[in-house]
Length: 323
Image (tube, rainbow, N blue to C red; front, side, top):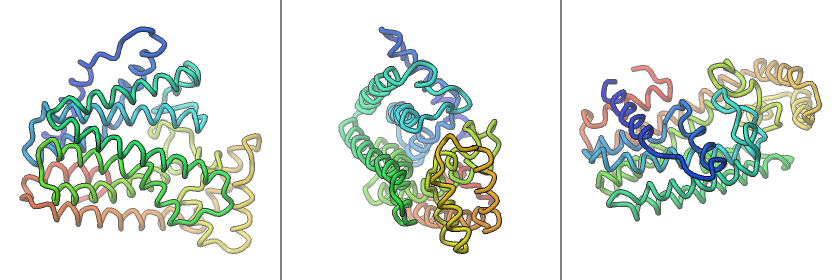
């Protein structure tokens, strides 16, 4: 745990020293507002832990870690515009605090800065290529997510592919970039990437659960936002699979109601159906299977357990595993 805390502090110090100021202030203030908020710093931590595992230079790895955090926050700014989300991490979103035009421009500037940071280390060209690949994949995943809003039928495999692209690939790329900066071999990087994919799938399914089954003060988003916005998450799709004909029709009806309907009443009714069908437990079982696959790939990395222990500990914290 001490090593993890040290890397978290090292990244926090590096981030604090980074100058996000500039003119016009309307462009740069939202960047600092977003990236300096307290967040999980999950992607930079995965990058730094992967680099540390292979004995890489931490000072070199801080640049791709910063690139990943900057890029991730850029995607959040634009996601919040598309989702019309009023809050992020318990704070007003950029488009709410300023406006959509400023949010778009600030996000664009963050994307450019992410590539500037990725190019800093000696492996910069390869790191930037990895970042560009994941940027396109995330756009593909986001478009799939938008398409789902108007599709009558979304299958569980389609949903899983969407979250792989929208969420899991960035966690995998964070590990890939950290290992690349350390000069790891391709086979180990491949196993680490797959570890990140499966960890990311589990992480997103957990996020789907937390949207409904968590304290808004802890989660930082409004309770039941996915239900209110008619988002077809894994919980909804699993409920359709498990439901009686009557419950299935009622769920489909509830997920066609627009925003002017009583939001809390809708969320309460959907949750009661989920609870009756034990949907939360069914999704948790799928999460555990992704966790199992993830740790199989971590086991396959050709390093001693001693070298893998910090990344393993951090990943177990994320997945809720207790050992």
